[in-house]
Length: 114
Length: 115
Image (spheres, rainbow over the protein chains, first blue to last red):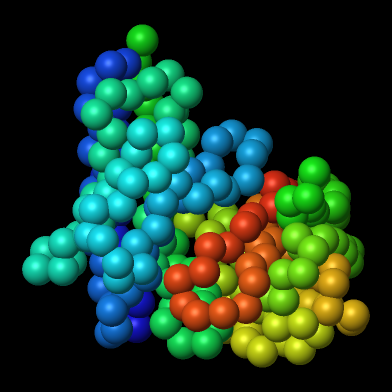
């Protein structure tokens, strides 16, 4: 079975400081992992994905994530937070069967303080 | 705009009424998914279609829920005899068929409030 655990329900950072959103996964297979972002009143948008290629994945808006199999982690980072980064972030693992269903974490709300 | 669209964006209904939501996926995307997101939680899988065939349903999809994709294009999700516990955001996503790890493209969602 596949699942993800987001270790922080809420993260608050000052503008211009680094962002770290933590995610641990559980998967019976070599997983496909994603980070999605959800801004208020907007649809979910893909930030980046890992599909067994390079372990350091670069996404949009300066975000990146590193797949660490030994730690079963897929943490999301950004060197410098921007006010527009304030949103809900979801770590997601994909069902590796034919359905390719997505299993979402409970989300981390990122607040950026001016 | 060629993204996933959903209609309506908001729906308020009284308990016991039936409601129907529509999703128009990205053209040529074979797969269409429905998810439900309750307050403070991540989306949870409900069901998915490949073309017109409904291939998987979650245990969350009670008998009061039915989904269709009659011509392999748009899809509808109907909830009969709504209950207050059905209040949630209903999300639709589409993706091209292929190997695992394919990105799903999400619509803006339909927010259902059952009074």
